[in-house]
Structures are given as structure tokens and as C-alpha cells.
Length: 611
Image (cartoon, rainbow, N blue to C red; front, top):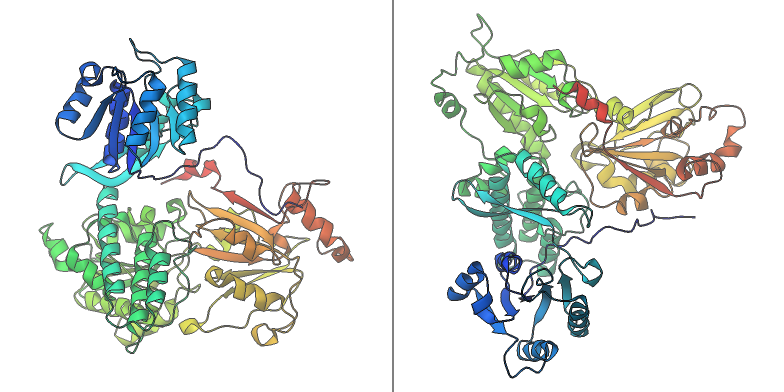
């Protein structure tokens, strides 16, 4: 039985590597290109070549004159052979970790295959990784087609670097693909990277600068979890306690690091790119930076009382709007109209994607809820107060929520709050993620012969409290929102016969099919399918999580896969469940059963419906 997908050979292990010392053999233009790449990675670059500077290309001679590279001539009389020259150089220059043999196609000293093999064996005996131009079998590593993006403000190279490889199948094509990727990056990407870097540094200073943390190792561990690039943490939605005025410095440090992860995942690049130093300090203290509404309207020479306001209205209006699961083409016409023609101020939940926010005219201010872990209640109150304040000034306020506002969108409490303050909001329905996400995963929540009903619930109660989950019914699909971050706890509540306090009735069989649907309807959608027995391990083995996500449990999960299976509810069907699951996960009759499956992306036909 296969527990994990088998590796498919032929890929590369792509690393962002910063070597201390690099050796380059040869002094032509390719050697200069390799030297420049190494210098940008802060490496010490040594050039070893025939004839030294006299036969080097113009660029390397200039870099030598500037003290950027160190030249050595291995054709000096004291060297009996090339190998002896390289050996002496390596003895005199410890610490070389990478070597590039670049003169395999350079005349008049074009290196032979035999010479390359000798050099390769020598370098490998010193544990030095080698790249030999045009000889793949003598390469321990290859170079990607790389572009380091330039900061438009300072006109200097930024920290954002894009690399593409075709693994030897087409170097020229990899360059073209890299150019296409770079051309499609939003202009705010570079500034966003710069600002997030500053924000991470500030968070580290606050975390490690705690004067008397109860346990400094906890601060460091959490800092690594939430800030380091190669974090082992799989989701920025990991639960944390509700924020309090009595939390310790360690708890405050953890919370700030969690917030850095949250804004990196959810905020639009344009908002990240616009952060000032003061904004970052405010953010790490729990205050979301907001552009003053009056200033944004002054930039357009417009009065706040007239921009987009409804005709003849002396008071403002409030709309509670659902944006659907994320794909802009799933917006209702009413939502599109409100966002593009009526809104003065948009108060958006953090889960609404950039693609939807991009539809809002530039003159309309957009504020994003700061519902970070442990801070949701306070952030909710601030958004409602902001809506009332703006509406009292005669503005049209759009409270923008993902999915449908009344499906775990807290629309009810907002309606009552707005009503108490003299405003009757208009609720505009949206396509609920509870229904759309399973559909995008090819899972019908109801299907004759597999699921006669469905139930939607949340995986977490108010203020993070545990809730009671529904009992198992073979003919019912269970959709759990906001539960992926607590997946192990949810699975235990569903399957453990002793969990009667956390479940309404009968326990779920461990072989019940389940799917985790992440980023539904978006290009990076991912669906992890397995059984309740293995879904926790399946998700953990699939890499970092991609919030928002939901859990779908029931036999409808497998009923449309492949040839389909709508015999689940037939009399006596339970006795075939083991083979049913094996066929589903294994890909057909007789196939070796697997324990889970991971599928990415959405049907390309959705591009035909893009707005």
C-alpha cells in the first residue's frame, strides 16, 4: 500500500543558496556572468584561468581592477600541469564550496572532455559542488534563468528574485517563461517584499528584545515558526488565545509574529506596498493602518458627501455584500454594481482576494479587517463603528464579506448593530463557499444514491470555544467551515466513540471519505482527499496550508470521481465500503490502494468566463 505519492525523477532541488567562496575556471563572458551572480549573493569570487588577466574578457578585467574578484593564472611556470595548479590553488584557498567550469566552449583554450572529467574528480574529492558548462553528467547543480527585479523608487536591485528552470529541456525557453512571469507581476510586488522584510525585522526586534520573557526559547521558537522563510508551520491560522490586557511579553511576541504571517497571506500587495514605518509599528501593536477617507477623496478633488452617494439621499447607506468564494466571475450583478458604482468606502474582510478588490475604483477607500488570531472580536467592533461613522457623514458603505454574508459571515450581529444606530442595511447575497467549494472540487453536497441531505457547521465556536459536531448519517454530507486549522481535533471529535460531549450522536467510521478544499475557485486551489483515518497525515504531508479552507465529510466526496459511485445508499452497501474506498483512492479496480490524493488548480474553462 502506497502511503505517499512516488517521486517522479527529472526535477531539480531548487535552493536559494548563498556560498561563501566560489571558484570559476575560465575568464570569458560566461565566467563573467557566473561571477556577477555569485557577487550578488555576497560570495567571494576567485577566477582561475589560462593567461590570467591578459586573456580575460573586459568585464572581468574591470571587476578585478575594482577589487571585486581575485584572479589566479594556472599556466604559471611553477605548475607542472593544470591539475597541479588547481590542487595548489585549493590548498592555498580553503573554503571553496562551489566551482564553475566555464571554458568548455571558449577558444583558444577550449577545455577537453577528458580535462573536465579530471577537474570534476579533483573538485569532488574536496567536497566541492561542480557545474560544467554543456556537460550535464559533470554537473552537481545547474543555474536557473534568473532575474532580480529592480525597485522602481530607488532604481536599485530589490530582494525579489525570480528563477525558472526547464531541467535541461530548453534554456532559451526558460528565459522566455521567466520574462513572461516577471511581466505579469503586479507593480506593487517589489515594494510589498521590501515592506514585509522590514515588518519581519521589526517583529523580531520586539520579540527578541523582550526584557524579561518567562521562557526566551519559546519566543525564539515562535519567531522561527512564524517569520523564517522555510517555516515548518503549515498555516497562519493556527489558533491562539484571545488577546487580553494581561498577556505576557512572550504572548505578545507570539501574537505579533502571527500577525506578520497573517498579513503576508491575506493582505493585497498594494496595501503591503503602501505601509510606512509608522504603519508597521501600529500594526505590530494591533492597530491596522488606514488611509484617511477624506484624504483619499481630496486627492480626486471631490467632496466626501457627493462621491457615489445615492441620488437624493441625505444620509448614507450601508450594504452587507457577499463576494462569493473568490473568483470574480462568480460575483452577482448586484455585488458588482455596488462595488464599482455606488461605494464610497469598502470595509472588507481579509479573505476577500485581490482579484475582487481590484474591481473597486481607485478613488474608493478600502479598509481590510484586522481579524488576526486572538483579535477578532475587537476588529469586528471597529469595522462596525467605522461603517456607522462613515454612513453618518452621508457616505455609501459596503461591508464586503467572502461567500455569503449570512453563512458564518456575522451579518446578523452587524444588522442589529446598524439598526440600533439608525441604519437599515441591505444584505446582498453571495455565492456561498459552503456550496461552491465542494462543487469546484467535483463534490456534490447532495447526490441521489450517495447523499440525501447536507449540513453546514463551523469548526470553532464563538471566542474559539469548542462546539458539538453533528452525528454520523450515511446519507448526509457534512461541510465544516473554519475547521482546517483544528483538523486533528475535529477528526477526533467525529470518530472517537468516547467523544459524546463533542458530537451529537453516532461516531463516524474511520473509512468515511473526506476532502480538504483550499483556496476554492482560485488558480492555486488545492483539494486533499482521503479518509478520516488518514486525512490529518495527508494534509501534513502536502506542504504548507493554503487558507481559507474547508472540510467536506461524507460519501458524496467519492461519488463523482472517475466512473462515479452512486450505490452508497443501496441496502447492504456498507459491506463493500473497504473496496469502494480502495477503488476511489487507488484510481480503479485492481490498482494499488493509496491513502490520499492531492489535486491542484481549477478547470481551465473558467478562464472563458473571467470578467
